[in-house]
Amino acid sequence: MLHLVRNNSPYTAILLFLLTLTLHLQALTHAVLPHAEASQFFYGWLLHGLSYIFGKSAFAYTLFSVLLLFVQALIINRLAIRHRLFMHQHYLPAFCFIVLSSLNPALSVFGAPLICNFLLLGVMHLLLASRNHQNANKQIFNLGFLIMPAALLEFPAVVFVLYAFVALLIIRPFSFREWMVMLLGLVMPLYILVVILFCTDKLQLLHLWPELGVSLPRQLKPAEYYLGVAGGLIVWLCICVYNMQSQLPKAPIFIRRSWIVVTLLLFFSLIAACFTAPSVQGGWMICLPALSLILAQAFSHERNKKVNRISFYFVLALVIFAQIFLPL
Image (tube, rainbow, N blue to C red; front, side, top):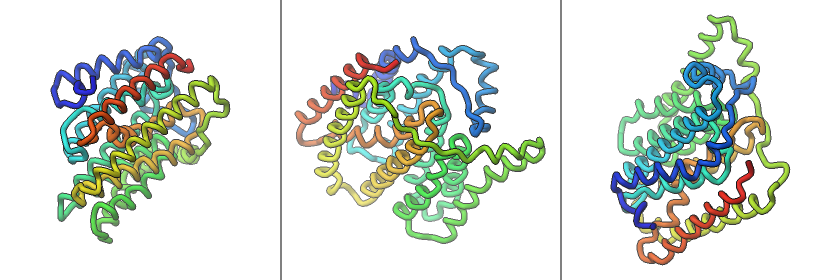
């Protein structure tokens, strides 16, 4: 079965679409209507616009979310191919993203973190693309311009402002001018929003925007589900670290720097997810793009195909386990 996702055939995308619908079937049958918190006024405007299309149908919103997850999986796969993160072209990152999003029903709910992921994928693309340009002012400005809307959708995403500066320092030589360009890109969306709020006499909404919380499960019920999934992800991650240690030292320097940028994105995503308010739907979804790229390394060992097969069947067993014990 592994060879079905290790090739770059367009028929694989169809199989992945069917896999997405299958793995999220329980989420579709237990659909949840999205809502915006008081601090998420920007996201609330988006929900208000979508209400004219979906009304108050929880199933329609959940189906739309599942379709967006599939689109994000394809975008992640395209980024991996375009920036040569792997030696061969395949659908492994897309497969990992679909699997990860199916491990918990909260990751299938339409929410602000799902929209933030599209912006973060754009940020990662611009960062990796900037390494090929001597004058990357346009890419760097757009980089900042994408981060601030993510922070407006979900306040903890403001931590990606620091991520952008650190990642830019890794991917490119330090340039004070480029940092000022990115700072201008960061300020511009906020300036536009302030002007809109001022003109509509809603400037007081900005006081509601900063909101932090601790998005960790208070009770591990059912315990077998949380312990099993956590243990499975740890084993999966250990296999990835083993494969990366054996292959990345031989990779070109720009590929190694790209993986550092991806790993940093996962680190900052974990921070943003941890400090998301518990009432926010699907807060941990923001970690999936970077995590799926890293976990895809478990199936990409070039010399030991047996390790790839064992890893793949282990992940399938993890998926079956999660589907059986899903907390609904």
